[in-house]
Length: 336
Image (tube, rainbow, N blue to C red; front, side, top):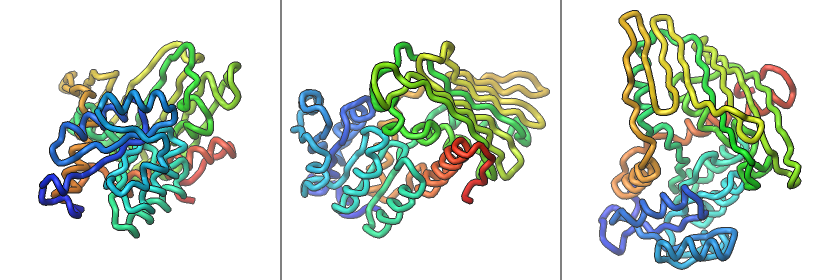
């Protein structure tokens, strides 16, 4: 989708506006300003003082509302780095205004809304890209390269548990603003569907500890899901964070009929009959810049992106099946 940006002249720079003032927004701003094919125009946020200070860091003016940002005629690309619950409505408004859109995962808090946005982007002939930098990481690429060594995978356990004491009063600890745990953290699902394909059924349980300080917030959450892939692989996915978690755990173990693969943080091993091989997994740094570069490559010279909208939507559909399973207390078929 090279559009009108292919010539590379100053008149055809990709002019970007960013919604958000957090870590991801900062990395996006740096990447946009470091690339001679793009120009950062403005930044929108919720808190006027913070937004102004953040925008001054990058030498651009601030606007106090994302609604004002998406309407601007001098913006081609809207980059959404705000709270999860806002992603869908900002993406919709930007697409309706004729803008290209990059959004941090999840695209929306329901698979149905995500499907509507994908259809809208196609109708508008505009880029809609859902970031999933984990797929770009050295860890994920090392897993892909080493996976044939385990033979036929039959079981895996993926754990993402984070001790955080005290729990912050921010959107990522708010039920409605973060969303169902495996939707808000859909990357945990997306990594597995990227590696192992389609899921047949999901069984899920979840628990929240409500915050004693503020209504709507939680101090901890725990979500466990069992995914049965159509290949027969059984996967256990554990996600939790907050004050009730006393030991952080970021591990992935894959068992196959010829070996096992383990990842602990940024360390990895492949265990087979021939012995144990240490995996070089690389760093997580620079992934937002890499994602941004691929977006600009796509817009200027039409190169394909590393993740498709269909893949993003499918991961959300699996996460949505987990939500429904937790609500009804039954095994749910994906897509039913």
